[in-house]
Image (cartoon, rainbow, N blue to C red; front, side, top):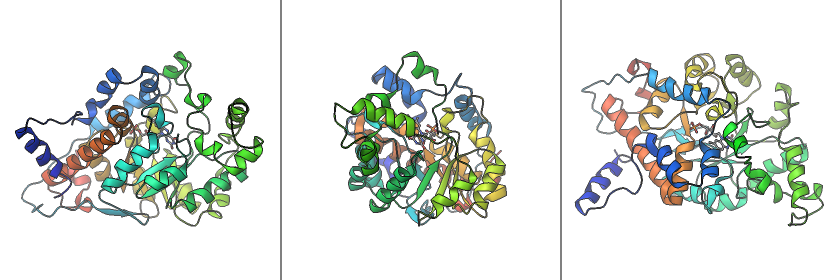
Length: 382
Ligand SMILES: Cc1cc2nc3c(=O)[nH]c(=O)nc-3n(C[C@H](O)[C@H](O)[C@H](O)COP(=O)(O)O)c2cc1C
């Protein structure tokens, strides 16, 4: 036990009348964030595609599974540490790539990187970050790079070289967002951070991008640069055949994020990928898409022996993480909760969210009678 020491720390604090600054039930964070954060920024994070049906389905899918605890199994020496695709981590939990974080806190991704590094939790840095990958690398511990594959191949290659130079160990290619979905919450307030120059910092700092817009981006040419960004952000022509291009340009592991269909999971394996993230982007892309958790077990059963199968979309608590792991995910990515933590308390808010999640995950394993992640199987689910 170690991760759950946070629980003791909180109760001991109570003896001196110190209470946690933020809620410890992470499923309530959204409501607190809604009260305290700027409405447009909150709406951008909380929002989903269309009617929100898939975002709701993600949560309902977790509710349909229940844990069935086992007793008398000596769980005194519980150890959650794992190694995923060569990256050691204290628990099978990573921070999902979330762009434009400076809309929530001026320190943005840098604060997230410091909080994650303090706990040894890997961070997935988004191409759409509001800090450059070089700035984040300086603050970060273990880090993976999430690519939005732009139309311009020279720009894509430049991103890969910068990520490699910045010590990003794994390349995560997000496939489900080559354009933004219909998101009424942002449409109703006509709010898109990128058009205001937030979330384009990796582009504006890139030599290939700069050459294309005639040099460094200044106030004068910012509108042109943003239009160039709009034209280049995603490439709808991509097919499975294009993955060979990436494979030839990245030496480390490659993970495809946004896999929902079983046949796509199979194709990822045929294409020589190392892993996938079963994800529907937190319900932000295809409204009416299936809950990500509902796709997880069959995908694990089909490709789990060939690919690292990671999961995101809907994880809010340690118990949620335990359910996804019991269904066969090698690790889970957590998204919105840490963004709310950032908005509420900067680096300390993110650290709080991570410590709560890891503590609750460790306690859930212990109280379910699972001494390690390996012992967390479908026999513990109903
Ligand atoms: C505000 C916001 C921005 C996001 N930006 C990115 C991004 O830049 N790249 C990416 O691959 N996924 C992005 N995602 C999706 C997350 O990586 C992740 O798939 C999703 O948040 C998981 O669902 P959850 O929020 O329910 O945990 C974003 C999600 C949110 C909420």
